[in-house]
Length: 109
Image (tube, rainbow, N blue to C red):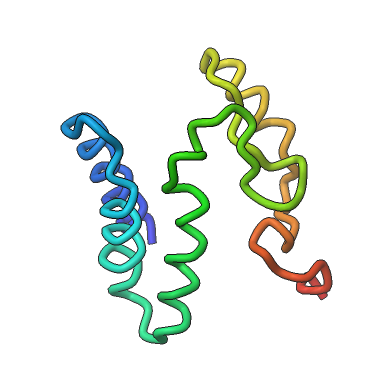
């Protein structure tokens, strides 16, 4: 739901604005287990959400071109202007490859 996303976005901004260091563990817990996990009833799905978010809420995300998946196309772009970031986003495919979620390519079938 959009409300989960908007709440998570606001909380991440608040944590980043008010903390001297990035609280990666707290952000992962807050977003995965509270904001989204509250809607997920299967404990395996909660573990999956936590696992996926650990790729984003980690110190390595600040490294230029940190890979977000095994595919070379998906990485954290270098710091730059808003236009440069938008240009990178516009190079991404419109349909997500299952491999960016750690799934086998046949997951599209």
